[in-house]
Image (cartoon, rainbow, N blue to C red; front, side, top):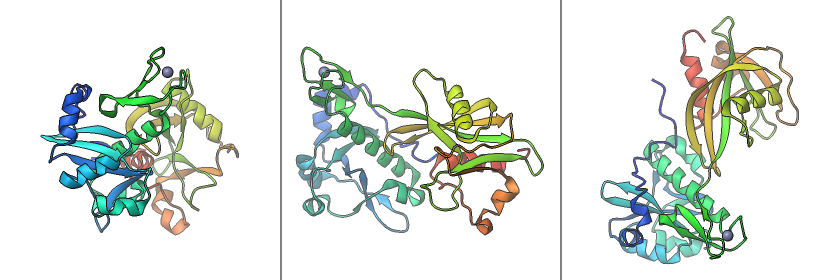
Length: 308
Ligand SMILES: [Zn+2]
């Protein structure tokens, strides 16, 4: 069985109906059992260790923290416990230390491989939602300030003549493993960007253009980056990737051409790799993307297949 994709399955009921009820939100925000997920400048509060854990704040600490918070948003319910996230970015760290009572603000991407999956999903959700708030403080229609509503799942333009409602956004991006048949189970196409760590190869990926289907985006990106034509574009799985605001849509595609023509504006290199070559990546000085990424999930899934 392929493993579960990181940053999914938070186990939270997002309570879309309840979060419109301001009295319900206020009551739960100040409930003793409510857990606050703090965020500071895109970093999550984590207790480090061999298995880092998400640190939430409850009770009296939570009340102090909420008084200092900028945006606060409901993440959802787990059983009878409400989870909110609170943005503390406007403060310097020393001011926050006594309020949070422990833990460190860390980049989720660095620690999530060794975290319990469900916790990583909650932290990713909090990070993505608060990032959207920070980038949408003004109305894109009329330029007036916007205010958070619906427990932090909508922002309303303060200008009564406009009154536009803004909802959280995610940017769709396609990510695809392109394969071709051949000996040793066939080969897959991977590339690398100049800015990546030396030797790292990954699946190709790119953002979806306006007026473009996902299938078209897959074919365009592979052609654009590596000069390879594809067919049989098949959806596999998706992954929220709130770094800062993407949804990765994972695909497989079959190559109908073999020759690679790397676009130097997009990639440093692209190559076909057989399963045998990937098995020897370590001795070749090459590496695959990290376990948390859907890129790695796509590669591992292909590696596990019998017929390539
Ligand atoms: Zn407006």
